[in-house]
Image (cartoon, rainbow, N blue to C red; front, side, top):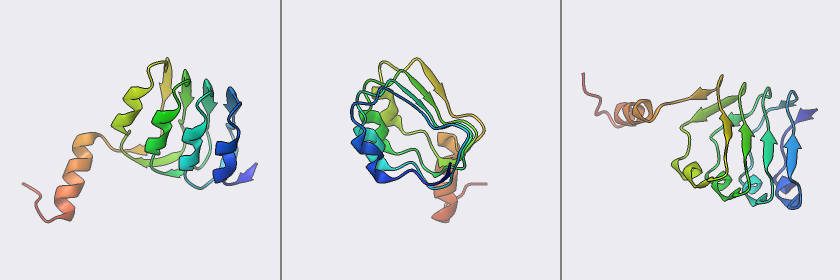
Length: 116
């Protein structure tokens, strides 16, 4: 499939498994995805997703498997994802994510406070 993940994806509240891998979704992950509290398996690998991982994903309390690898996701991994106590598999490899220290350096540089 080509296109984007629509915000109405959050309406699929009874879904327990969603594999949308190897498509060409090119927008960001909609924050409404966090409404899928029954979802145990989510794979969005090998797309062209951009932007940050939404904090709302921390509401997906049933999630056991999350694969966001091979996209163009940027920013940092939200600390709020630590709430996902059932999560057994988490893959965000091959993206444009920053480590927390890199994010802090970027902020300092932006504010003109970069130490040499």
